[in-house]
Image (cartoon, rainbow, N blue to C red; front, side, top):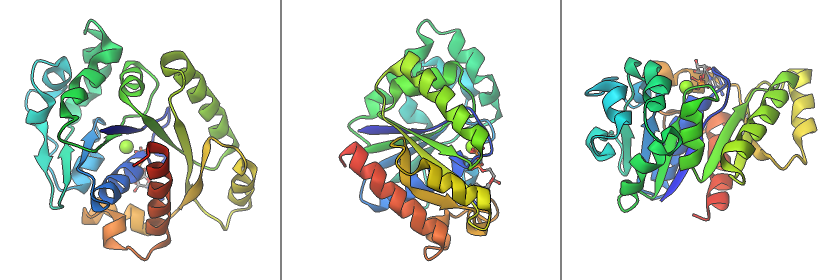
Length: 246
Ligand SMILES: Nc1ncnc2c1ncn2[C@@H]1O[C@H](COP(=O)(O)OP(=O)(O)O)[C@@H](O)[C@H]1O
Ligand SMILES: [Mg+2]
């Protein structure tokens, strides 16, 4: 089992869009895949037409008293299951903080699933707090969408420091996200990260097919497979497969 976290300090940068599509591509590649929604906005849950309702909420799920397995839901797609989130996950930081070993809590929850899934993808809330610590502790790869703006590179440096502190050596893959090639600055950013080994070769374009996921509740790679964004998600999944030795 490989655990991939889509995470980072910032919100609104395309984490959920990535997590939803990568999970679909993983399952289509034949991997038994689990998408774990940890964000109180529950957008990944919504994209897979599931109800944003967790029995007992974050306190019970993250409290670790019940097997994670009991929260798993089937989707409309083969080999793809989801653990939904709901608004109680707003308190996730607090809930984890009350545990004895907060940073180990998520790893402890996913470990028993090793025989049932090949790939687990976590869609994380923004932030570099206790939840992020627990996420990096549990992960084999961190995928970090970065919007093409000079300040985003700074925030990626901060994330690298965070990883070094909490999980030194964890492979991290930054991905330029919501790229509009009509913009000079965006083209410059693509050039400037070439050769920066932290970055994926694939770049996710700004695309209305990704925006429509919220409305149609179908992952972009399924709804518009010919679209440029779908192509970039497939390329990115290929890069991730390589990094994970899948
Ligand atoms: N590549 C993209 N092209 C166009 N819109 C996007 C793209 N990626 C994300 N969005 C839109 O931007 C908003 C934030 O994306 P989301 O994936 O929810 O970010 P995050 O999970 O980092 O908060 C959503 O409305 C989403 O539909
Ligand atoms: Mg999100």
